[in-house]
Length: 162
Image (cartoon, rainbow, N blue to C red):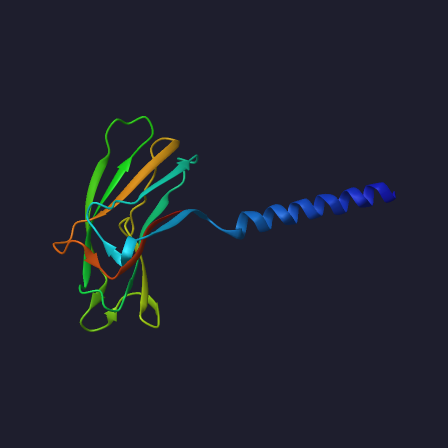
């Protein structure tokens, strides 16, 4: 009888652990890269590599940028290149990302004079699916007229299951 009770406690513990782990986080990938000298030259294009296993779930893709209050623009233009597993070439998408408005100021969380933006790149209301399982490579490049782009501290990418 005692052995059956111990087995019951073990099964209960395993079930609770699995439920906690499954609810813990839906994040798949997040990485930021430091911009050398806080001056983002257009030739510096951070690359992010990650593996997708689940192609049946929708994902959200975020652009991350951290800058200080001296950043000179209300927006940033970037090229996001994506290379899928088994593909010879990458696809490039250009984004004009709003970082501030005249009415509200910076559209970010901030501390002192440092601001961090997490901008959703997948259109609201649309679901984004990775087509193939495997290793993906994304590259971010700034394409602003000012080169180098001063007062940018970090940039990165976040991909999470919806």
